Image 1 (cartoon, rainbow, N blue to C red):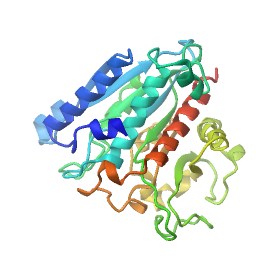
Image 2 (image 1 turned 30 degrees about the horizontal axis):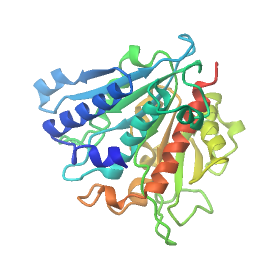
Image 3 (image 1 turned 180 degrees about the vertical axis):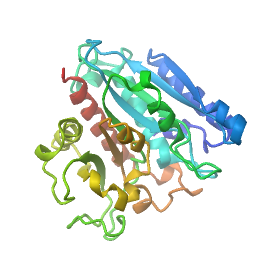
Image 4 (image 1 turned 30 degrees about the vertical axis):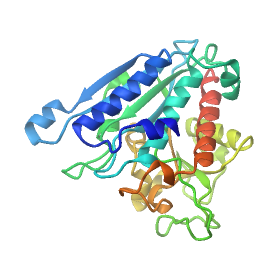
Length: 316
């Protein structure tokens, strides 16, 4: 929770976003990780008045430069007027903690053991991406940072998969506190919000079919890494392979920074506490650190660390 409380709140003005970038890059430097700023949209701003943005990209090298990389990404901007503790301070905190654990600056060997992989010998690299402008802009657009990132061939050439985090720190336990997109054709979904959702694409045509063996191999690896973690710790994971044919009918499944990766046919999963379908403080001034469930957030972060550890350990 320390990072959630320390991040500037809110993060939607040029000055507050710059303060957030300074915080992120300083923490990465503390862990011995050099970050790169990738500015985009400067010409667009000149022509249209829509503000340009800055993504932050940092790499933790694997032992095999040819093995590719796993992206762990999240947006750092907030809705206007919202402190953004869950949306998306919870995810930024998890990226920073993941960076600490997998860097050479980990506090102790137990940190590395908690990750179930030795970051110094795992073949794949970890690419941390902090996206700007996920939230809706004045012209109605959104996801601008992830769109800019995925439009640069050099950014995506070696990506083997992406894990995108968007709100992973809020839990509710009263029956009926969890909602879902209208007409989502999945039976027996929980009515309490004490699970972490993991969404990935599949070639299947039936949302009721959740057999990972019927999912394309790259998405199966991503979903399977979380399924493996679910066997070890809580909170409960709801792992959902989403048929690509259903996306036009459920636009809520395309609301975050995973969508541009899907558009580029890059395997990606969205990890979320389901946002406004659970959290009543979504996009409000009440999205404050004290509303988060610290135990749930810690467990969510450990799921992410476990999944990253499993994925970077694979040589293929």
